[in-house]
Every structure is written in C-alpha cells, then in structure tokens.
Length: 254
Image (cartoon, rainbow, N blue to C red; front, side, top):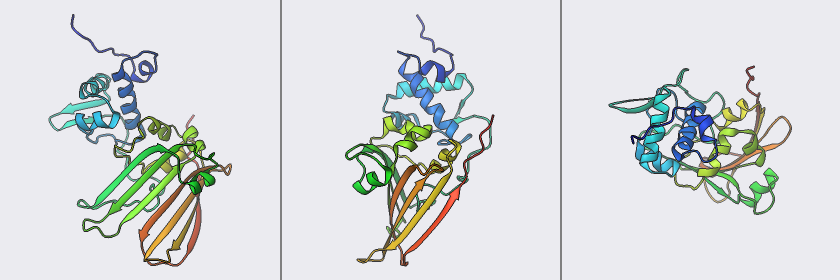
C-alpha cells in the first residue's frame, strides 16, 4: 500500500496526542517561519542542518517539509527550499538587538550564539527572583573579528515570567542543549509583541585589571517583573556609564 502524507493543518495535527513526529517538526519549523527566525523568502537551512537543529533524522525533516509544501508554506527549487509566507521579509529588529553588544558580523568574522537549560549564575538567579539551583534558559553569545580582535562575550539568563509570557522563547526549552546556533536577535520584538513594555537599565563599568568593560543589562516589564539579565564583556576604554530607556509594548491587533 502506498504511503500518504496527511493534509491537516500542522498546528492542529501536531498537538494531537500520538501524532507523527514529522507533524511536530513541521509545526516547530512553521513557528520559526512565522516569528521571523527564518524570514519569508529566505532559503531554509539544508536537511542535514535542520535534522541537527531539531534532533531528528533527515527523513523526518523531509516529511515535515513535504507537509509545509503541500500547504503552500514552503517552496522548493534547484537552489533549495524557502519560506513563502505572506508579508515583507523580516529585516533588522524594530528595537535594540539582542543581546546587548550584538553586532552584524563581517563575512570572515566569528559570530556564535547558543542556548542551554541550566542553573544560571547566582547573581542572575537573584536578579530574576529564581530559587537557588532552579534551571532556566541561558543564552551565550560570542563574537570576534576575523583576526581575533574585538572579542565580545555575553551571557543572558531569562526569567520564568519571560518564558511564560513569550511563546517564541518558551519554544527553545526543548532544544536548549547548546549544540545548535541560536541567534535570538528578535527577542525584544517578541517580548513587545507579547504585550510587554520593556524597561532597560544598562550599567557599563571599566574593569580594573585590563582594557575591557563589563556591561550589565537588566530588563523588566511594566509591572516591574524581571525578564532577563545579561552580562557582556567587551574590549573598550570607558568610565562608568548608566543609562535607561523604555520600549512600549507593540499594539495588539483585534
């Protein structure tokens, strides 16, 4: 008997108990297409990369892509597969890029970001109101020029509030093993779309034992609930500087 692929909407089918694995992968991939992780019109990573990203076989990825192709959400040509969702391509985030200190890397530069589910540094746990030894989503960013200069390293811990309120962040919980690339440049846009007004407080302090500075960013919402804290180390020569700004929540539609 020939095998057929069901044609129900992925988001509905994948949540059904006992649904095929490829439906869940199709749903997760569709979520990334919709939230801008993979912008409309941009070529998708290859099957091997997607398999590693989702922790499944290439055959499962192939079946998931077929589901999205049948619904007209993905198109494939000789150059590969790309998203066909309506709307303009997602460009630079409307607000500041995440994490603090992130930059657009030159073609030959090193730029790496990962996420893990682990116990955050004690000072992060205290700032976020987390119980001791309670794990959370931790993001690590590392960037340097092609010659190794201009090194920037950042560690971000998210609060339970952020993971509850922001669906795009919560989805990383089940693939936060530190193995795949996790550029969360649109994290602040996701927070605003969830109805959160963002208040940033950045403290920049010159370290006594070298030319580097430490930047500590704390972000909370309109209810004074902590959302994230980031520690960035970057080569620079500056005195202490503290500045604050607020990003209003995005307007809700409907």
